[in-house]
Length: 359
Ligand code: PMP
Image (cartoon, protein in one colour):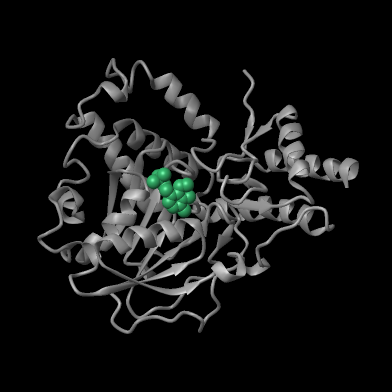
């Protein structure tokens, strides 16, 4: 069996141990004689998987008791819509910080159902950093402040989260379980699962329970957080396969020592690649050091032709997923929890050799 080094941004590599376990359990899940995909979502067996996924996430992220954990359809993008529908009451506005592509998508969706105020934008500087303390122009009466903790495309991340007087909301799709996050500082956190948790098409929401009561009557029942809290993520048939893989991935993350241990490894992995970028002018990062992502490392080469050559030769060397997002070009290595230090070392050595022969 040849497993490739997969540096894709998402759907992304999952831990081999989780895939092997899923393979072994595919025909007979825990003696049930069926796979999890064939099992009633109302069965005792599935309920215990769902409970296990929730308690795994709760332990790993140290989620306080007054927060609900939800597994919903629609990935992270549905949350771009659900957050303003639920948290922004009629006639009120919300602050959004624009640090790149994913912030912009959240802003665009927020704009559809009400008033959005952009409290800071990195656009004029080519999205090279997060704002410094004092730069945010927050509205005194905003319902919440929305940030994207890590811009998957631009490789920009909030190293320290902003202090705000109102509810802080974050899209943590591309650094969930990669770094420690003090959940108590946020009213709501959400993530698509396909980077660090499991397959695509499922979204995780962590919400302080009192906030779920804010939704106006005009919000359709399905789009209310309160609906899904009341039914324990079983209002309708959930993505049972997704929940199962999240449960198994959480168990794997705990076996690795939890988020603190994984974060240490992730920082080492990122440092290996940034060291390659910083040692010469051949590779260039547009991101300021303080704002550099530890999960999505983005860089450019002297020309697009060299970038194409880099991606093609990397593929021959057993590495895929390195082409930067179509909107920004360049190279991007996504190095979530399932990517080992050894895999990153292979990439770093390849970079060194590529620079030697093409620099
Ligand atoms: N936010 C971020 C930071 C992302 O990286 C992505 C997907 N790459 C999304 C939102 C959208 O996620 P989904 O496709 O699950 O809706």
